Length: 494
Ligand code: ADP
Image 1 (cartoon, rainbow, N blue to C red):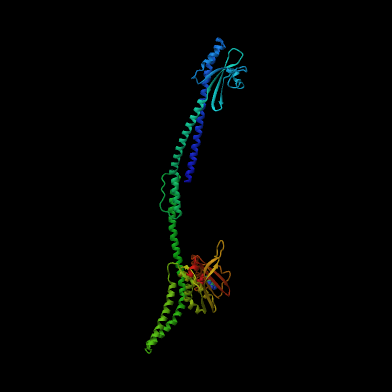
Image 2 (cartoon, rainbow, N blue to C red):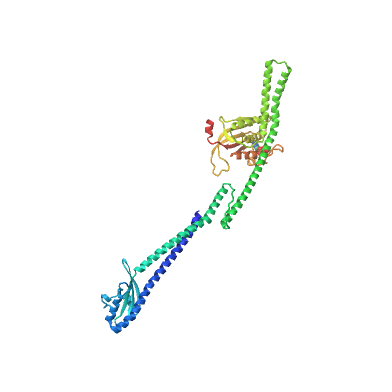
């Protein structure tokens, strides 16, 4: 709209300029024509009178000639006339209206026409026609005419020019505005509305601008661009769906790898309750027990089979592929699930798995299955790094930390899951590589090098990061930072 107005302003300014110039030149020409007509009329009259007066002066003398001149001025005459002497002796009646100094050309025999404005009046035009009387005294006919008519004519010509110019400007302006809005303003508005829709991701509704000008060309280019964007959009969606599916498969494969490792520990874990169940069942089958003892043995069998069911359910829960869904959960629950799942495996390696939960709930909105996978991975790595008996500690807490790769580092509050071991530690030159895919220091069949890179991806998706501190021979500490919920404190206290 602004562009249309600018264009219109330029066009209207052009129309105004040309119209005003035309009006000015027209008025000036007309006034000049009128003025020169007045001058010519006076000269023609003066010349014809001169011939008559010269002859009369010769034949009938000065008195008769002057009487004729005086008699010429009637009431209705526009041009008046009188005799003037062009010397210093001229008395009041025959003294020229214009100072003698200005009348030198007339004394030399030339005609002269001069305008003499008067204060508060239009003034007069004086025309001098030299007359040869035969005497040595220079004399002339002085003709004069009021300039009122000229000024009235000038006024009416200006008024006419102003009205005409105003009309042309108005008509030109309105026409230019109407055409501007129709051919520039409206298409531009449609184009900008379309651009806004494209900006919000709405590629529908192609733009149809009639004609073959640049704007309709631009509209069809935008339509083509939208079609291409729709295509690319579809392609991006299908590619990212494929990528997500591949990533999910990779994560699931990593989970199954962990399940495989857990299986031996689980089998060992199931051995004890199975023995108890078998022994108690044999005792009942012997038929030598009192009713109370049968009841007691049945209760023990029930509790042991519950324990076995829990162990198997935990393993199946961990292995199950599920769609991503986030929920608000106390991270201490995830930590204790991990410890439960891995205790038997750790025990096989003489490692004591310690759960060190915070006193209060540590709330976070997370995909619990994914975070369980991350924590399991960290604890398994920690357990495998222990070549002697010792502790692996899983702790949960709120922590103040600075996110890595931040433009302006600023500390803030996060929730933190920490796995600390007393294992072999990581060499300083390997510490940056541990999150790279396929980086492993374990034997073939033992490690794939994918666990930490998958864990890092999961935590990044949650808006957090994993930090690692390690000292060779002393152990490592992996800290998982996740965004702390806004007003978490209020919720905790509620
Ligand atoms: P994988 O366990 O299959 O090797 P990961 O990505 O989980 O793959 O680990 C990559 C490497 O990081 C491991 O091979 C190991 O060298 C190192 N690493 C990870 N956790 C620890 C730890 N707690 N202590 C020592 N080294 C570790």
